[in-house]
Length: 209
Image 1: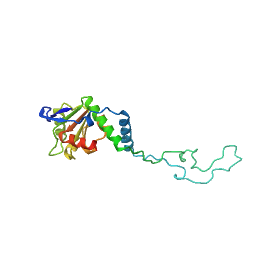
Image 2: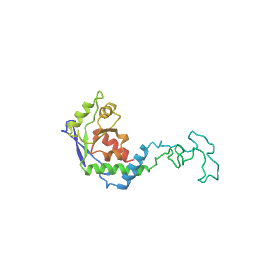
Image 3: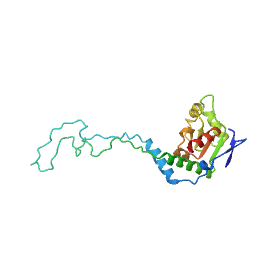
Image 4: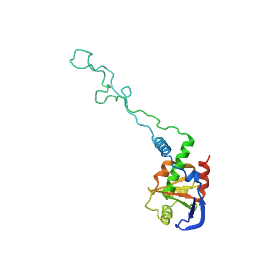
Protein backbone atom coordinates (compact mmCIF):
# COMPACT_ATOMS: atom_id res chain seq x y z
CA UNK A 1 0.00 0.00 0.00
CA UNK A 2 1.01 3.62 -0.47
CA UNK A 3 0.79 6.53 1.95
CA UNK A 4 1.28 10.20 1.18
CA UNK A 5 4.18 11.89 2.95
CA UNK A 6 2.90 14.80 5.04
CA UNK A 7 4.59 18.10 5.76
CA UNK A 8 4.82 19.31 9.34
CA UNK A 9 1.76 21.52 8.77
CA UNK A 10 -0.36 18.54 7.72
CA UNK A 11 -0.27 19.21 3.97
CA UNK A 12 0.88 16.60 1.46
CA UNK A 13 4.35 16.89 -0.01
CA UNK A 14 3.39 15.24 -3.28
CA UNK A 15 5.59 12.22 -2.49
CA UNK A 16 4.30 8.76 -1.67
CA UNK A 17 5.88 5.95 0.33
CA UNK A 18 5.17 2.32 -0.48
CA UNK A 19 4.72 0.20 2.63
CA UNK A 20 5.67 -3.47 2.42
CA UNK A 21 2.71 -5.82 2.86
CA UNK A 22 5.06 -8.28 4.60
CA UNK A 23 5.60 -5.71 7.37
CA UNK A 24 2.47 -3.55 7.44
CA UNK A 25 -0.14 -5.87 5.99
CA UNK A 26 0.09 -9.22 7.77
CA UNK A 27 -2.67 -10.93 9.73
CA UNK A 28 -1.90 -9.83 13.33
CA UNK A 29 -0.78 -12.53 15.74
CA UNK A 30 -2.35 -11.61 19.08
CA UNK A 31 -0.46 -14.25 21.06
CA UNK A 32 2.89 -13.00 19.79
CA UNK A 33 1.85 -9.47 20.80
CA UNK A 34 0.87 -10.73 24.26
CA UNK A 35 4.23 -12.42 24.82
CA UNK A 36 6.25 -9.44 23.57
CA UNK A 37 4.33 -6.95 25.71
CA UNK A 38 4.61 -9.27 28.71
CA UNK A 39 8.39 -9.44 28.24
CA UNK A 40 8.69 -5.65 27.84
CA UNK A 41 6.75 -4.98 31.06
CA UNK A 42 8.61 -7.71 32.95
CA UNK A 43 11.95 -6.21 31.93
CA UNK A 44 10.88 -2.87 33.41
CA UNK A 45 10.51 -4.38 36.88
CA UNK A 46 13.50 -3.66 39.11
CA UNK A 47 12.87 -6.59 41.43
CA UNK A 48 14.52 -4.81 44.38
CA UNK A 49 11.80 -5.61 46.93
CA UNK A 50 13.22 -7.09 50.13
CA UNK A 51 12.13 -7.74 53.71
CA UNK A 52 14.38 -8.73 56.61
CA UNK A 53 14.30 -12.24 57.95
CA UNK A 54 15.09 -13.17 61.53
CA UNK A 55 18.81 -13.55 60.92
CA UNK A 56 19.02 -10.01 59.45
CA UNK A 57 17.37 -7.88 62.15
CA UNK A 58 19.06 -6.44 65.23
CA UNK A 59 18.08 -8.04 68.52
CA UNK A 60 19.12 -10.41 71.23
CA UNK A 61 19.27 -14.09 70.49
CA UNK A 62 18.78 -14.95 74.16
CA UNK A 63 15.98 -17.40 74.84
CA UNK A 64 13.05 -15.42 76.30
CA UNK A 65 11.81 -18.10 78.72
CA UNK A 66 12.35 -21.71 79.51
CA UNK A 67 11.27 -24.31 77.06
CA UNK A 68 8.56 -25.96 79.15
CA UNK A 69 6.52 -25.44 82.26
CA UNK A 70 5.16 -21.93 81.60
CA UNK A 71 1.71 -23.03 80.51
CA UNK A 72 2.12 -21.41 77.12
CA UNK A 73 3.70 -22.17 73.82
CA UNK A 74 7.45 -22.45 73.66
CA UNK A 75 9.21 -19.31 72.37
CA UNK A 76 12.63 -18.50 71.00
CA UNK A 77 14.31 -15.07 70.89
CA UNK A 78 12.71 -11.67 70.32
CA UNK A 79 13.76 -12.00 66.67
CA UNK A 80 11.10 -14.69 66.21
CA UNK A 81 8.51 -13.87 63.50
CA UNK A 82 5.66 -14.32 66.00
CA UNK A 83 6.72 -11.20 67.94
CA UNK A 84 6.34 -7.57 66.91
CA UNK A 85 9.64 -6.39 65.48
CA UNK A 86 10.69 -9.91 64.63
CA UNK A 87 11.81 -11.15 61.26
CA UNK A 88 9.38 -11.78 58.45
CA UNK A 89 8.60 -15.29 57.26
CA UNK A 90 8.73 -15.97 53.52
CA UNK A 91 9.14 -12.29 52.69
CA UNK A 92 10.00 -11.00 49.21
CA UNK A 93 13.58 -11.28 48.00
CA UNK A 94 15.36 -9.53 45.10
CA UNK A 95 14.80 -11.32 41.82
CA UNK A 96 15.09 -10.84 38.07
CA UNK A 97 11.74 -10.89 36.26
CA UNK A 98 13.14 -10.70 32.73
CA UNK A 99 12.87 -13.61 30.32
CA UNK A 100 13.95 -14.29 26.75
CA UNK A 101 11.89 -14.52 23.60
CA UNK A 102 12.74 -15.83 20.17
CA UNK A 103 13.88 -13.07 17.77
CA UNK A 104 11.45 -14.20 15.07
CA UNK A 105 8.53 -14.09 17.49
CA UNK A 106 9.40 -10.53 18.49
CA UNK A 107 9.51 -9.55 14.83
CA UNK A 108 6.07 -11.08 14.26
CA UNK A 109 4.76 -9.12 17.25
CA UNK A 110 6.08 -5.80 15.91
CA UNK A 111 4.77 -6.54 12.43
CA UNK A 112 1.39 -7.35 13.98
CA UNK A 113 1.35 -4.06 15.90
CA UNK A 114 2.21 -2.10 12.74
CA UNK A 115 -0.48 -3.96 10.79
CA UNK A 116 -3.03 -3.05 13.48
CA UNK A 117 -2.07 0.62 13.11
CA UNK A 118 -2.62 0.44 9.35
CA UNK A 119 -6.01 -1.25 9.83
CA UNK A 120 -7.03 1.43 12.33
CA UNK A 121 -5.88 4.24 9.99
CA UNK A 122 -3.71 5.59 12.81
CA UNK A 123 -0.39 5.50 10.94
CA UNK A 124 1.02 8.44 9.00
CA UNK A 125 4.31 9.18 7.26
CA UNK A 126 5.82 12.63 7.82
CA UNK A 127 8.88 14.44 6.62
CA UNK A 128 12.02 13.94 8.68
CA UNK A 129 11.99 16.01 11.87
CA UNK A 130 14.97 17.88 13.28
CA UNK A 131 15.30 20.91 15.56
CA UNK A 132 18.22 23.31 16.00
CA UNK A 133 17.61 23.45 19.76
CA UNK A 134 15.44 21.51 22.26
CA UNK A 135 12.23 23.52 22.65
CA UNK A 136 8.91 22.10 23.75
CA UNK A 137 6.98 24.79 21.86
CA UNK A 138 8.58 23.64 18.59
CA UNK A 139 7.35 20.08 19.12
CA UNK A 140 3.91 21.37 20.12
CA UNK A 141 3.81 23.37 16.89
CA UNK A 142 4.72 20.19 14.99
CA UNK A 143 1.87 18.26 16.67
CA UNK A 144 -0.52 21.16 16.16
CA UNK A 145 0.12 21.15 12.41
CA UNK A 146 -0.93 17.48 12.33
CA UNK A 147 -3.90 18.04 14.71
CA UNK A 148 -2.44 15.63 17.27
CA UNK A 149 -1.87 17.90 20.28
CA UNK A 150 -4.29 16.15 22.67
CA UNK A 151 -3.64 12.60 21.47
CA UNK A 152 -1.11 9.97 22.53
CA UNK A 153 1.51 9.97 19.80
CA UNK A 154 4.65 8.03 18.96
CA UNK A 155 7.17 9.55 16.55
CA UNK A 156 9.74 7.17 15.05
CA UNK A 157 12.85 9.03 13.88
CA UNK A 158 15.53 7.44 11.65
CA UNK A 159 18.44 8.45 13.89
CA UNK A 160 19.05 9.60 17.43
CA UNK A 161 17.60 13.11 17.15
CA UNK A 162 18.49 14.38 20.61
CA UNK A 163 16.84 17.80 20.22
CA UNK A 164 13.58 16.24 19.05
CA UNK A 165 13.61 13.80 21.97
CA UNK A 166 14.30 16.56 24.52
CA UNK A 167 11.61 18.77 22.98
CA UNK A 168 8.96 16.09 23.53
CA UNK A 169 10.06 14.96 26.97
CA UNK A 170 7.84 17.39 28.91
CA UNK A 171 4.70 16.36 27.02
CA UNK A 172 3.01 13.45 28.83
CA UNK A 173 1.19 12.14 25.75
CA UNK A 174 4.10 12.50 23.30
CA UNK A 175 6.84 9.92 22.79
CA UNK A 176 9.84 9.95 20.45
CA UNK A 177 11.96 6.86 19.75
CA UNK A 178 14.70 5.93 17.35
CA UNK A 179 13.74 3.38 14.71
CA UNK A 180 16.17 0.91 16.31
CA UNK A 181 14.32 1.14 19.65
CA UNK A 182 10.78 0.53 18.40
CA UNK A 183 8.90 -2.01 20.52
CA UNK A 184 5.48 -3.58 20.41
CA UNK A 185 4.22 -2.07 23.68
CA UNK A 186 4.83 1.54 22.66
CA UNK A 187 3.45 0.95 19.17
CA UNK A 188 0.15 -0.28 20.59
CA UNK A 189 0.06 2.24 23.42
CA UNK A 190 0.03 5.22 21.03
CA UNK A 191 -3.22 6.46 19.52
CA UNK A 192 -1.33 7.76 16.49
CA UNK A 193 1.92 6.46 15.03
CA UNK A 194 4.09 8.84 13.00
CA UNK A 195 6.90 7.40 10.91
CA UNK A 196 9.50 9.78 9.58
CA UNK A 197 10.06 9.31 5.86
CA UNK A 198 13.60 8.07 6.47
CA UNK A 199 12.45 5.57 9.10
CA UNK A 200 10.27 3.46 6.80
CA UNK A 201 13.04 1.72 4.83
CA UNK A 202 15.17 1.21 7.96
CA UNK A 203 12.23 -0.32 9.82
CA UNK A 204 11.44 -2.65 6.94
CA UNK A 205 15.06 -3.81 6.79
CA UNK A 206 15.13 -4.47 10.53
CA UNK A 207 11.95 -6.53 10.48
CA UNK A 208 12.80 -8.52 7.35
CA UNK A 209 16.07 -9.99 8.65
